[in-house]
Length: 292
Image (cartoon, rainbow, N blue to C red):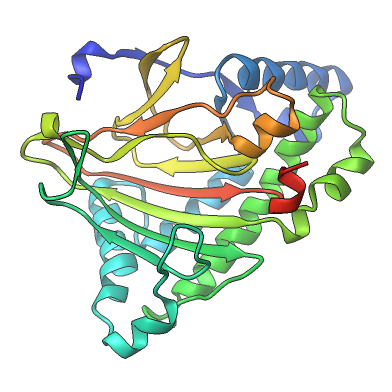
């Protein structure tokens, strides 16, 4: 792994979501152009608005904390992941997925130096589950399934507003967006990733380089550095902005835009001082639609 000092720190474009939904025609036109530039040049952008604060509070409920401090994150993630892990085997079996796109729950516990990828070890715990249109919620811990369902519903509303703006920038007709993308039956996958302090971060990685599968991915994280994206052939470190959501374009968007908006490689690195936690929800069209 590269040392964090060898990677340039950058701030990716920030979009004012309120102008997209309630701004004047001129403001909306400006935001559509900003979205077009961000998707074309970066494949990543951030945005914030009062709706985002509501969604972030919903996330805080999921992880069991009252704020985005590392302490609350860790406590909440324990509730989310380890609460499920500590269930009896017969209780977990109906939910345990066996393959990458299994709609049931996937749990990875890899905070060790045994699993090697290109001589680098994973250093993370992850909880991943399909939340739409198929949802196999865990019954324990109590309230988790309701929290995940609410977060899924709220994030779909925001995702659709963003897609309208992005599709408008691609000169799609607004009436065709919902129909052509089949969003009502599109996949939505929730992941919670926990990267605790690592004693040898130079030998580990939180998540290896990858591109996302869907149309758009929404990422909420605590204020701990760790996200790197590939831009113009080199890795850059993204500075997190408090009370904001990160968005990136995925493989489906790459196909839909005919290559104008690339599905960008990104990775998560670890450190030896602070816990990094990220909540990710990937939104896609149906597999059949994405292939056309």
